Image (tube, rainbow, N blue to C red; front, side):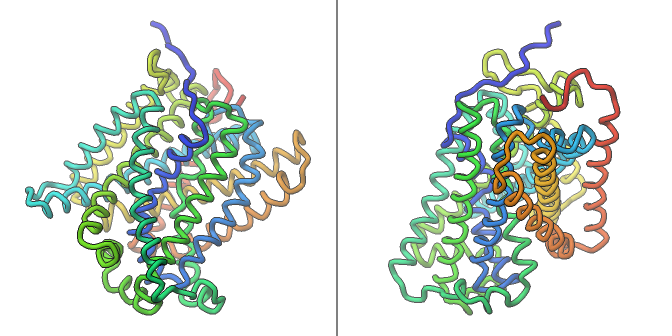
Length: 462
């Protein structure tokens, strides 16, 4: 039996890849979910500035990440970078950690979208059905798109992303045009450090999950050495500016004190209420529908990322080799895509049988897990960049290979420490649950590192 082709094909440009990773960040979902939490539990009306701070830290990370991208010809992203810089064992540990991390964030969004669709159906007079039923329907659609050529997913994500960003930008423009209570809290250092800055940073950094996945699409990029760095910087800047501007507009729509009060009173409905007030009932209804499509876009984006992790590991023979096969017609990682769909279906079944709440438990716990995992992966990648350029010296530019990565590592470690310190708050659970989730992530890394001792028939990184 033929093993089939083991390469991916595509001609994705900067725009297509940016759509992929910005959709994964789910901009409207962040504005609807994270901003109220940051206002209420973080540093109040100055929370928009926290997005800008986190963007600066991640831009430092991106400098080294992009400098190393031309020397890592694999599509494994974190996995390939860590393996190239720190060795096979940490690399495979990072790969297994990435699988758990991105699966967690995908499951978080599956829970959220199930609840959102159920609410919309009942709002329009439909029957009340279990949240997981809607999640399984979404899983089926995502599975079909993930099986097909990557450019089909890119087109779908492009349309959905433009729609969700457009309504928020219209809202922003109307708030600015009214100019009644434009907030200045973001300019005041005393406001920025008020409240709980640590919790604010934790919520803000979690909102950027997904931008770093640009390197996963390397094999399907038109000109990887140029496309991947440009897409990384573009995605990060677009996300950061959008979050900062839109969070400021939300605060301005209410006024500083009233915004914090509204966020604390009803964080779940604050954004829809705000958009309805500014744009009218039709705008509010559209926002609710676009929140659903925003979640769908995020699920599809993370599915594509996960499929390419499985594909890279299959080619390295670190998981069954069949995962490294590509479809002869679609040029997609079809076996890897089906594998991820199957895993998601099994875990959704476990959550459903356990009677877990889709938002308070599935979303909160899984999103918290993903935040912790991604921060650990980015810190490992920064360390790998520093070691790689000091050891092999293919590039000797101080800013790109030493200063920016070192500053990025320091910033990421600070964010990681804040996240660990406030982890029970992030997941909305107990310290025991937080410890259990942390143990799962550590175990995933350890299993991957130990698995690396198994003889491989293909190299981890070329």
